[in-house]
Length: 233
Image (cartoon, rainbow, N blue to C red; front, side, top):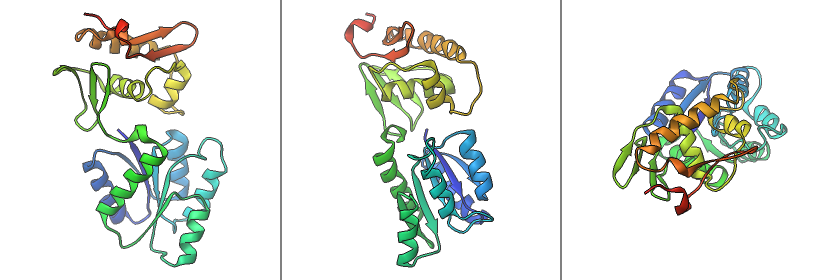
């Protein structure tokens, strides 16, 4: 499930955007100021930010420029959503690092389409489209995992872990990389906790003979493989 941060100081607009995003399957956090937005980004890096220009204190444009200048957030997808509709304003917003620029009043359907378009370009694995690797099918929209029609019951953490592994198959991921990408890079848990969730994931996949798709690479981390040799009969 993609994480969207909505930075908007008008509560009615923020709630309207939030409701539509949640109905579309996104996880939404709202920030009413630049300070709160920075706090949320520091806490957990979102998949995309919908950013108002006129905010209490620091402007959205200044915040976007700040994010583009920092190593951790330089690739963070940002869509400016603002009442400032002059050509010069649009140029300033895009030059500050925004990936798209939407003016108020706006269509929620168009905003959703632009969010999906930016995610396709910047973070395709964040989109809620079904993923198929080997015999496993994962559908983020319905939060279901299955093999040949047999559903696999997973907890929310194991689901996110499998989703990440399935969108990055055949790659080795260290525990610290999995911690950053699945749990969020500012979540403070022991790296060995990941081993517990991998064990639970394997136990769940064992019911459909797919546990061996999750490989341990000694001294490096974990990998999801689609090789037939990794599948049980």
